[in-house]
Amino acid sequence: MAAVATNGHANGHTDNIVDGKSPSDGLNYLPPSFYDQFLSQAAKERKPSPIRGLFPLEKKPGVLSLLAGKPNAATFPFTSLSFTIRSPQDPTQEVPITVDPNDLAAGLQYGDTAGLAPLLDWFCGLQGHSHGRKKTDHWRISTGSGSQDLIYKAVHALVDHGDPVLVESPVYAGVIPLFKTFHCDQIEVDTDADGICSSSLRDILENWPAGKPKPKVLYTVPYGCNPTGMTATTQRRKEVLELSRKHNFLILEDDPYYFLYYGKTERPPSYFTLEMEEPEVGRVLRFDSLSKILSAGIRIGFASGPVALLDAMDMHTGTSNLQVSSFTQVVTLALVKSWGYDNFILHTERVSQFYREKRDIFEAALRRHLDGLVQWETPEAGMFFWFKLLMNAPGDASVDEGDSEDLIRNKAYEEGVLALPGTVFLPNGRKTSYVRAAFSLSTEEQVNEALRRLRVVLLKERDGR
Picture (cartoon, rainbow, N blue to C red):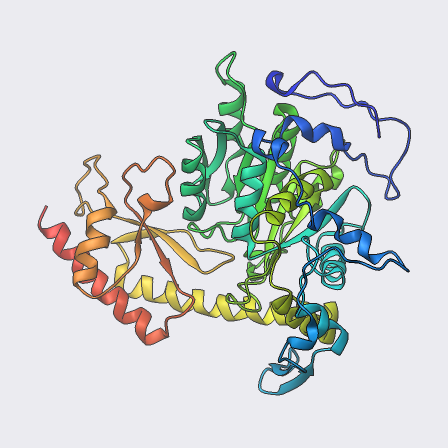
């Protein structure tokens, strides 16, 4: 193992002196021992499953295993599996797919905690295709039951009760209860039209109270952020990476909308890509999801990052849900094997085009019905609009911008339109005049009717002031 000299996490910056062994791709990876300072007490105390921990030994040629209580496949009623998919080249055409019998056999049985090896290999190749990451011994991939499952386990592996954590604000509402479970001090980092504000992050960390441990993690959704729809610029990402090294924290890059980017300019590189330009590599733990591009119900996501962190997460999986469904993994494997990477990317491009058209329809309706009543930035990825209610009458310069909570949750719903008040996306629950509206499912007619109804509510509220 490489030798490391460190001045400790509590002091902020960590200086790493790695021995002369260069990885195959020439990058300076942080060694496994580096991550000891980040692991939670629960992760350090968690022990491997006494049975699952021995599964790899069954694979040695010639071994007769009496180890696991796996059910005998002769009792399973499934004998074959076929399904049809839309062709990536022509979505009007359906293509039949039959699951390979050997893959089906694996899919009907207990499998490896991290996931089925052929699917992991395919995902690894996808990370090379999409993010330029070559396969090495320094990082790997684990599957999860959606990226939410993986984020949950990552937080358990890294956060202790009462820890401070950095979260972009507004933030994906699904992580707020998770951090609250640990009674974390959620430190809100400002965002704007260019994504997370590195200046806000720098100000927080450079003025951190002396003697108080700095946060170990930053949570961010860099493409099509839920709820704001904003995509972080390359410059912002580079500045955040620099700060992660200077102040010694890990970046949890939650990226379910990476393939739903439809901006006019080239897609910015991910943190997972950009960290390869850093003096040291291994501060990014990336989360991908198939929910938005293949199926939400298939419940498959995957995490990519340092081996030590994935090992800690797998230890959690081994004692909780054991593994992601092998059955849905082989269905996914059959699909992506039939497509290959080029057709997979072609499919995602069609998906992003679909949502770009949905975005344009929604924005046209905003202009038609709510011009002067709301304010917004045009999203370049994802499936959400984040707009601000302008509750003051024209010429009224009062400071109070209003609160969307009662107006959206109650008054708008009474008028027959349902959206989310922005306060649910603010870690500390303060009031806000912002609203999140999803445009993924509604038809053009439904969008126009919903915003017409919302206009009635807003005008009535403004007149009543």
